Length: 357
Image 1 (cartoon, rainbow, N blue to C red):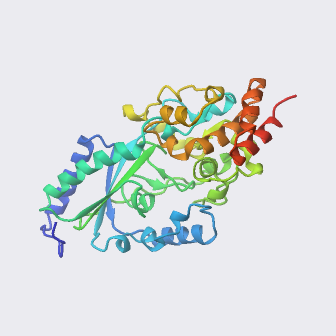
Image 2: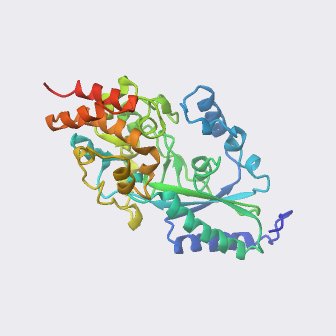
């Protein structure tokens, strides 16, 4: 497609086109659609640079690479003039916080209970991008679903989709904390939304509920203390100081998301691919005792859980079994303590020491 050198539309056309794109996005099944500039506020850029400079990104080295592109969309793609941000609701039917009172239950993060959202969202977003290309004389555009150095949340916060809460995630006045985001960079200028104002006010529920104090200040995250990071991204041993706090969280943590009072307006997802699959719905920790790599891959095929691999999964399982307080966990933990993987074995040894004698 030819590179755009100027906006080919007259003054009235962009407003009409924006309305048409919004209508098409909703018709394709997106729950939210907004428009904003292809840049982020300086305060967001400074927060991101400080996050990396202070090492709060932990071992997520990919956050440090191409740092300039993550903090400036036009560095990634100089042709970018405006952005389309879409949201897809993945709201749960229950309150994830209620699961914490069931220590023998395997507690998975809501976003990972079924199909990988990248697959569902990107397929739909590409259809929207094709529609836009067909209605803009083939003007260049780029599609992103968490697959490039794109500051999705900061971009979304400049649209009508929502604002970044004190937990640093997006909050929607219609869907609470439960939106997956996708972004299209456009090489044409479209009118930006009036951004949804920050409506957190004096509320600090997301900060107060964090079991590991991973939100040291409003709008600041220390990933090295975050159970979502530790149980998913972190490849090493879970630091001992955070193991009891893991409770039954075998994959991820939703506490700060679930605590947000704006969730009272949220709706359960209508997307079949986001509803819990049988293997995780009401699953007990002991259901996964004896899992080998083949069983793990079969159970979590097409799921985000699969990408952490069997060893991290067993590491997490061992710690959660130690926190479960059930004597039935002793023999599975003894087996895990004999694992050839030293991290799994050490985690199981620690867990055995947590069970009542």
